[in-house]
Length: 203
Image 1 (cartoon, rainbow, N blue to C red):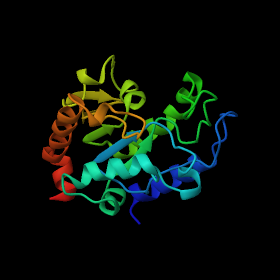
Image 2: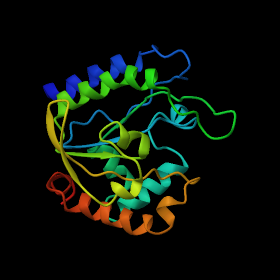
Image 3: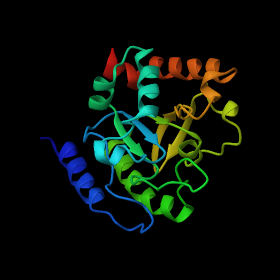
């Protein structure tokens, strides 16, 4: 095991033991300990991801991996070769009014240090934030139509990288299934497929 992979294993071990947010519901959910030039950032796990032990393990994941299959990469290859991070790593719990609770700012900030550590270890060349919450942690976003279907060169935590946002693949959302969302999603996926970091993994 090389030093970078060992460092990711050690970081994830510390992350799994984190219990600093009393209203978040463990277990901590992490992706595979892979050193990759491509890093994706989800929002927060749902109630099914904890028992499954992996991010995007339920309905939204099925949609997400169909998107990546459309550019030639199946779920198993994606999980094995892309580092899967998130804004928050524990399930926030249910919103009494329906759906999952949106993490509070203090919870997001408590988890931000882990993401910064992952950036420092991997120095990703391509970052894929998935959903408005994740996108908003990297850049200002008012409307998804302003950022989906475009790529941005940014410096994040000392790392110069390309950011290509995706909408959240939630079944409750119609954004990615209606225009202009459908066309913008296709444009974003093509930008990802054409990026040199993606091609280095999935040529």
